[in-house]
Length: 362
Image (cartoon, rainbow, N blue to C red; front, side):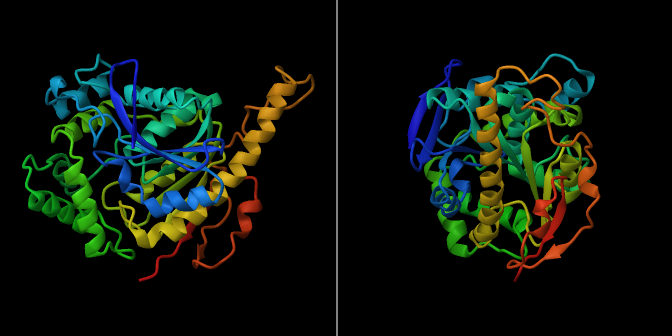
């Protein structure tokens, strides 16, 4: 594990795997989750596919800086400020967290990278893809949304449970906390083993941050409000992955996200909840590697075009940064299909966006 210091004076802890000259992939984790929630086996699969993989702890998480001096924000005030477009009453915003990613890229001398974000990390990655086009080679948004999900009472209760981290240094308290969350948010077709839960709980306990950090991050999400207009500005090649059985952010939120991003590919994984169990790694790594390989080829081609000519040629219909399709609903044209883990991805040849269900096995 290494660390960098941002211009804001924050310390970000990160890990880098793979050759430093390989195409970089940055993994951005979700609400209160430490970097190692990204399965190491998934990172290794991406490295074997020829990529440099970088995962890191967001601010207020794990071994990165805790902002306890910023206090314990009010989620209701953050929600109202976001709806009324008022000044932020919160410690920091998703915009600030996206600047952390750029600071990490600058420190590692990465002009651009592929971004893979989960949940809150997907929101951060979406913002960067929309605002910093030249720095994002591709976007993968996993179990995320385009706005604050319109959740029933049960889902809000899950969020509040997530925000209530154990303040005790007792290992048992952290194990109980993670076991409780896994029971609520886990993937029914890909359940975590007891050994996985215990290992994850032990790492969390060893690298625990402030128990109020989750609430500060949740305030940033709440304040962000509706980002649907922002998502329509995304031009990079995008893959949206969502679990059909996600109890925290409903799959309809993932479908909406894909519908807003021009040419986005949508993959619905049956039996997947709001977690990353080891049993899901083979399926996820296959989808991610295919997306990264195609995105990297497109990025290299467009980069060469930018180098050869700083301006589009006269008479050209598009510039290197324009999307292949301007229809945000193009992905609805192909019928929804269900494939088994071993089936071929035949309609990836379609240049329009697509939606597919990926089956889970018990």
